[in-house]
Amino acid sequence: MVDVWSIMAPFAKFAAYMTMFGASGTGLFLLHFGGSLSQATSGYCELILRRSAKGGILAAIFLFATIVGNIGGDIQSIIDPMILELAASSKGGRATFILLAGFIAIFLWGGRLSITMMVIGMTGILLTLSSFALVGHATNAGPIAQLPLVIHLLGLSYWLGSFLPLRELCISPSDASKIHDIAHRFGIYAMGYVGGLLLAGILFAYLLLGDPKLLFTSTYGNVLLAKLAAVCLLLLLGAINKFRLVPFLLNDPQAGSRRLRKSIHLEIMLSLFVLATTGFLTTSVSLPG
Image 1 (tube, rainbow, N blue to C red):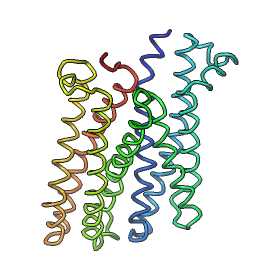
Image 2 (cartoon, helix red, strand yellow; image 1 turned 180 degrees about the vertical axis):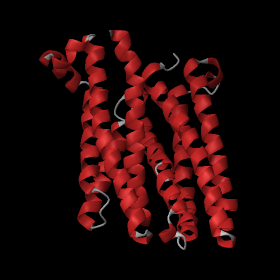
Image 3 (cartoon, one colour; image 1 turned 45 degrees about the horizontal axis):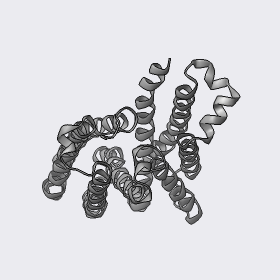
Image 4 (tube, one colour; image 1 turned 90 degrees about the vertical axis):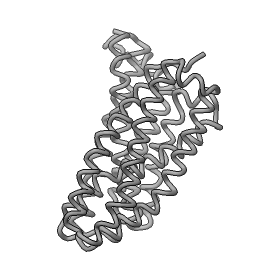
């Protein structure tokens, strides 16, 4: 049964990443652009945020169950008070509780733009992001690696979490006149977020591996290279969107929206691969050495 729980762990982590980016990323999109969206699109974003937060609560519970199962080794472990206590006091257990608290805060926020609710929302976003830095390979190098990981996840949240809101903008008639302005501002902010994402990711990988040769000579490095290749493709698509498709929106909004929507669909597929490899790296592959 231990093997079963080990197999389930990457899926639990993948679900946690998916819902985290859905909740935190959509939340960041609303914080930046909520005041410019139509009521229909704003409501759509709030729906994504709430559903992602609900899914995140379930994902956090699922993740905790895999921790319990790996400690106890069988299905009965999830109702064993002693095993539950051991799991709750472990690094993974504490991180899962922080993740759960973050999703609850985001759900309570619901995307509302009052000062108080935005503070609750930002607290929830920071809790969900920081929970991933409190467990796994990041703890091997201490706070010097944990902070870059949080920055890396923040940039990814802004980027990946924008796909569905931007896709909705492309098909919403009430936002047709705003899509160029929002897409343009999104690209400007993305330069900062993605720049931080890349720098923090490179630093984090260096702190974990130490030797660049391990990218080619270790299983962890090989999987990381596959993830980096997908990220490079995402960057290429993002650059095409910013420098070709966004300006095209001014000349032909309808055709530009269709092209942007198709590009977003491809980015979503690549992002799923990135999240799957990340979940595999953090649960099933040991660091070299």
